[in-house]
Length: 274
Image 1: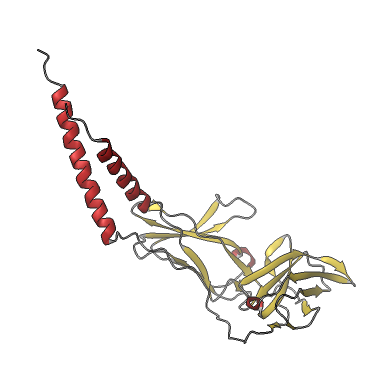
Image 2: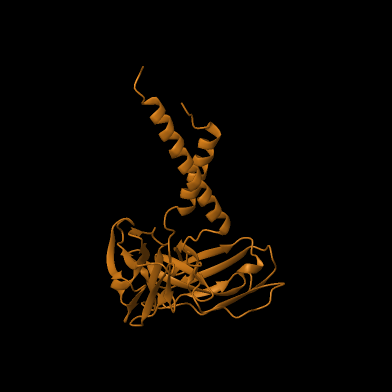
């Protein structure tokens, strides 16, 4: 009776496992807001879901707050990968994520996007305790203060979409304040900062932004900040390389040989006894 060589069986199994591992699950897409995720009242904004070219359907969902991520409210299923909001209002604020469908399967959800309405309250003030020109390695304290008793203050950098810190406020001199620490400061932290105030009951409705504070770190040169949203490169469809195609062909050939040997072994063992 013929027996399948163990080395041949092991090689076939390893190649098969490698082939399935390369397919994997559909990777998550990327969601961005145009022109940005901090939007003044009654202003338009468009949510963009970036997936691979082979995506067949898209779904942009709003995450119910304070409900868990699993309970999303479906907003727009379809082949379009954009969701246009003509006027920003408080009920449109919150967390959004998206997914796409390909080959009958839905991808993983994108990282959540925080959509915020700004300009609802008076602006706080932002100042640097040690000045706006510092040396690398120093400990920088940025003070955000308002006479309004905000529950939290939010510190943003550059285009207003990069949230650096979010901290609770404390009573101070007839108002509320918080101290944002940049310890130790590095050259990458040079740039324009603003702070906002907000209340816990409406975490995605912020005040007007503070006046900008330009933080300079010695040894850096100013460069214009990009107003375009940054998003990771959309996942590309899995395309086998030449090497992978060779391995797939070899795996198929080995599986065929295994089937033939197993069939021969079964036929030999199934003979009528003498």
